[in-house]
Length: 303
Image (tube, rainbow, N blue to C red; front, side, top):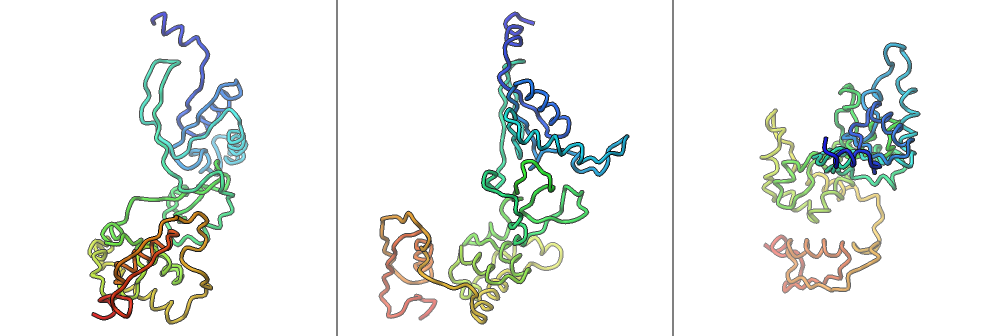
């Protein structure tokens, strides 16, 4: 070993990266942190605890696994010298002992840990069910979930698996899988709200759309594609027939405190012009629509 390398190793360590948030990684982090060393605990899943948190009993004493690991979870989560990096991966490690440089990738949780209270209200309204990996596929969980009740950090995380084929194919990029799941749950008004985030004319478009999304629906590989276009039309027709339970007041831009100062003119009140005005108004812009015909709607109305 060169003299320079020996000197670097003998110098004070600035911080330590512990890879893996299982029971061994947690204990190593606690030992280092209690020695006054700053520790970064890296875990690729949404919470630390590892396999031991999944067990009921431990060998050979048959003690309760959670009774052993939960105090360590709490201590690691509260320790001032430990920074927990969940949903993270180690991409590269360069340098020499005592002077390593680690390159990490932190995957998004889609939930702000600082604001999440762990109330689980989000789980109650989530319409998407997925296989529960924590219980080895024996039951299901929602797309927004907490790995287990004692998880650290004790906040929720959203599973996102890229863009669905139906959304990628839709010209309006409508979240078809979202409103189909809500319709399955009987939540038709909420389904219509999801549709209108992308398409302000679901009843009309639901009758003329060529539905390229259905040709890409992976359900077609099993039997037949999901009737996405018909479901979109159904949601709009159902709300029109039964009325909305939500009181509508004000305009689309209500609730926006910092409105843009620019005013926008849209020439033509066809579907494209009205859709543009609709989305701009939701962003807080003042929009004026000009139309040469006596009625708005363009060819969708007079054609």
